[in-house]
Image 1 (tube, rainbow, N blue to C red):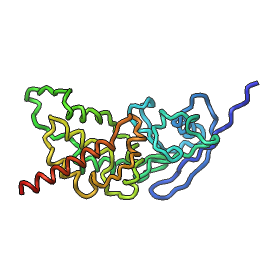
Image 2 (image 1 turned 180 degrees about the vertical axis):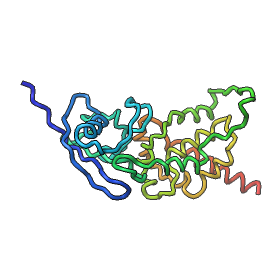
Image 3 (image 1 turned 90 degrees about the vertical axis):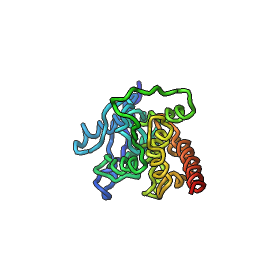
Image 4 (image 1 turned 180 degrees about the horizontal axis):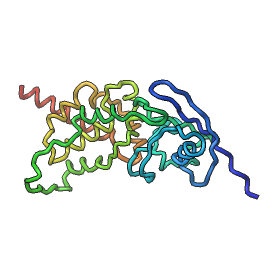
Length: 244
């Protein structure tokens, strides 16, 4: 006879704002079960008031990101058997962000820092102008392409210990996007980007611990992008001093 699978002991953060506590649920263990499956089971079978985010369920949108046993993960792509510890799970909202309710983090500070980093396209032409071809073989274009698959899930931001210790730090996602645009031949905001990322909370606050790169589900390398910004902001400062 096949032994019956043990139930999972799942501790889930419940609360709003800065107040709350963990609540434990017994969840049936299933084959090929993801952490998102577990959260959905709790909401559908045990407590319909549990609040969480998800959309695509296939690792395309990143909206289901949560802390699982202390590590930020896409819950739709995280299989329980790979992360459970003695049939237990601890699930929390992404850290380094305010909590709206239960497992839902407030992403506004995360996106506000994209704006602060000038991590938005600065057009050099209008829709009426002819499209200028881009040479995909240049080092600049390859540097830009290296971070283009960021989907703004916030995993790297939640993993970053510098953000945890310095709330003003722009964070790896915003800085990686700034590096992408800095290397984009069609972006006209080079000076604005360099000024934004070299100021207070900018790239020079990074301690190069590498958690952002280690935990990125899309296997991007924000740490190398931030290192690139450090080099370019230093050169920019030297040029300004020379030209003064």
